[in-house]
Length: 306
Ligand SMILES: Cc1cc2nc3c(=O)[nH]c(=O)nc-3n(C[C@H](O)[C@H](O)[C@H](O)COP(=O)(O)OP(=O)(O)OC[C@H]3O[C@@H](n4cnc5c(N)ncnc54)[C@H](O)[C@@H]3O)c2cc1C
Figure 1 (tube, rainbow, N blue to C red):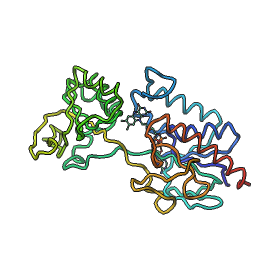
Figure 2 (figure 1 turned 90 degrees about the horizontal axis):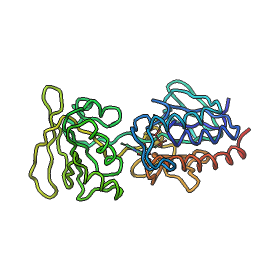
Figure 3 (figure 1 turned 180 degrees about the horizontal axis):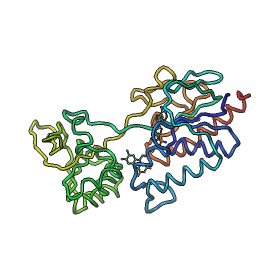
Figure 4 (figure 1 turned 90 degrees about the vertical axis):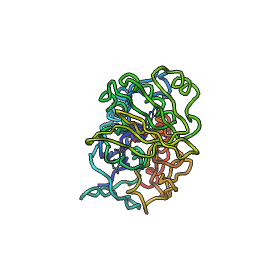
């Protein structure tokens, strides 16, 4: 059986495309390898999403987006797409199964970037964490550091003050790279100490638990040990596009190259959200991409479908 459309990923980009596709009467199949809702599951508070001036919880927004997509009863397979053969139809391979579709929308998002310093992996889940919403409560009354200087790191630093006794915001750049209002919020927050121009060079621990990090101040080789109970690594994400190598063009960062209609280098295969080239890495942008991609995909399906 050839589906009209297969969507890879059920984050904001995929769910938006799916809701539009369902409304248009298309036969849609979703693939999801982890949890329905994508990265929204891990967001305690979503800011900068239109319509919610005071923010909205990731769980609530996820619930509404899933409900909108489910209204049209799409098929959902909890499987990882491992390979795609572009063609007419496109053939998607999972562990052992094959599925066909006239058009495909790739919305696989990204995975949190690591710092790449010694002992980081060893203390992953033993003091080193990425999801502030999931793991923040485990660090009650601890002194923790958030590494990163962009909006998402600043938001999480403020959130983590609800639990931690003190939050250090550590960034290697000379200045924080977030919106002015957020920078003001963290720099004036009584429980946040901002350390710019400071690079984490090593994670240290004892008896299998993190106890701190070594940092280096910009331009000097002098190191300092920061004693910590937790380390939130918040330095962006790497696109989940390994399975697409050789299928569609990827840029130097591994993001899917698209045109203004979100079409990839393979005709009939579109991309949306954090995984596409030059994405602003925001939910509003993912939602917009999903809308653009399904608009173009619908035209493709009308021309190439049975
Ligand atoms: C710490 C942090 C805080 C953030 N805070 C905000 C905020 O306040 N406001 C805001 O607008 N944005 C925020 N963002 C960004 C926002 O989460 C992303 O922009 C958004 O989730 C991207 O949506 P997406 O649909 O592209 O991908 P995702 O939400 O990442 O969803 C992709 C889905 O695809 C699935 N998948 C991947 N590969 C495969 C495969 N091969 N087969 C099957 N399924 C697959 C994944 O499991 C995942 O469920 C934040 C991000 C971070 C890291």
